[in-house]
Length: 135
Picture 1 (spheres, one colour):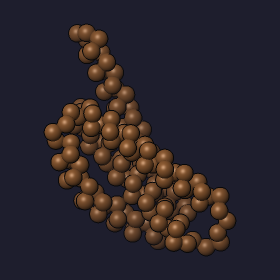
Picture 2 (cartoon, one colour):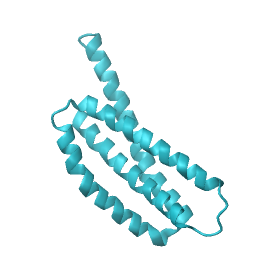
Picture 3 (tube, rainbow, N blue to C red):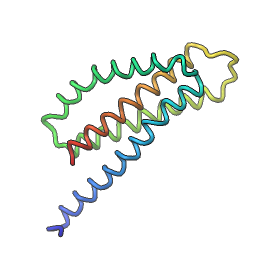
Picture 4 (cartoon, rainbow, N blue to C red):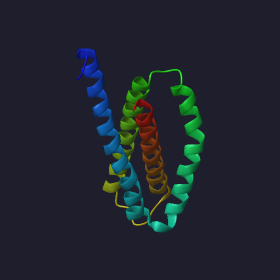
């Protein structure tokens, strides 16, 4: 059983973070590619996946350096909040693109959908990494 109220709060936070990580994983591994292919086609997907891989190589060491001296729960909360804010901003930009009536795919559309793909892929990775650290 649980020892006291502080331990109960910690356990409930870990359960919530685990649930959010699973939601982020399911959303992150499906939403980006589906939106990308739907709007830009499958021919451009390889480029977005390559950029995503480069971002992982660039961000992961810096994230590890940042997270090492800090409490895992605090870092996890920061990852969740910053990821949610970043993806919400990109979602607003994508909804703006949806309202436009452009006959052809322009550079702005390509950049924003690629940014969304890379950011949601990277955010999902960081959430899952931190979830493993907290567990």
